[in-house]
Image (cartoon, rainbow, N blue to C red; front, side, top):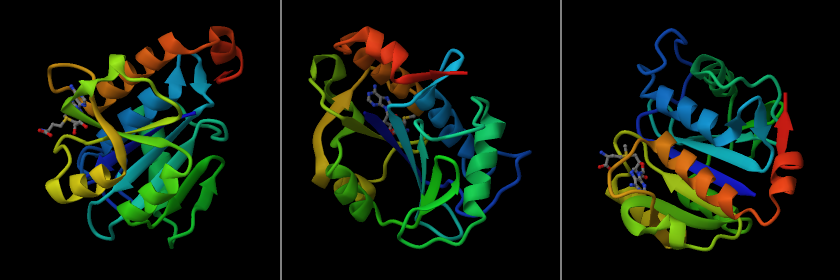
Length: 206
Ligand SMILES: C[S@@+](CC[C@H](N)C(=O)[O-])C[C@H]1O[C@@H](n2cnc3c(N)ncnc32)[C@H](O)[C@@H]1O
C-alpha cells in the first residue's frame, strides 16, 4: 500500500462552484493530486489511498479520503474529482469517517489525530525540498505528506514532524505537489518486487 496526504492550506471546507475550482482555495491542486495518485493509463491504482487535509474556510479542518480499491465512477479530470469532493463537503461531519460515495469518505480530524491513526498502518514521510533523496530510501507502506502552493506552514509542519520517519526530497528544485506524487510512484514502481503483481493485482483497468 501507498498513501498520500496533501495539505490544502486554503482549500474550502464547504461546497464550491465547479466552474471555479481554483477559486475554492486552490482546490484544483487537490484534484490534480488525486488524479496523479490514483490513475494510470486506462486504470486505477487499487493499492493507493489519498487523504486531502482541508484547512480553508469556513469550517476547517476536514479530511476527504479516496480509496483506489473501492472508488467508483471517478475520472481523472479535475472537474469530476472536484464533483466528488464537493459532494463530500455537502455532508455533516464528525470525527468518524462517513462514506459519501463508494470509496470516498469525509471526517473532521485534527491533524495529530489523523496522523496518529495513519501511523498504525503507514510509515510517514514528509516531502520537503531539503530532505533525503527519495531514491535512496527504503520504504514499507509509505504515506507521503505534501504541501500545496503555499507549502506547509510552520505550525502544521511541527505536527507532521512528530510523526515523520524521515524528510524526503524528489528533486533539487521545488516542484508542484502532483509532480512529487508522480516521481514517488515512479520510484516505488521501479522497486516493486513483483512487477506482474503490480500490473495485475494492484491496478484495476477500466
Ligand atoms: C509547490 S511546493 C511548495 C512551495 C512553497 N512555496 C514553499 O516554499 O513551501 C508544494 C509541496 O511539494 C513538495 N515538494 C516540492 N518540491 C519538492 C521536492 N523537490 N522534494 C520534495 N518535496 C517537494 C513539498 O511538500 C511542498 O510543500
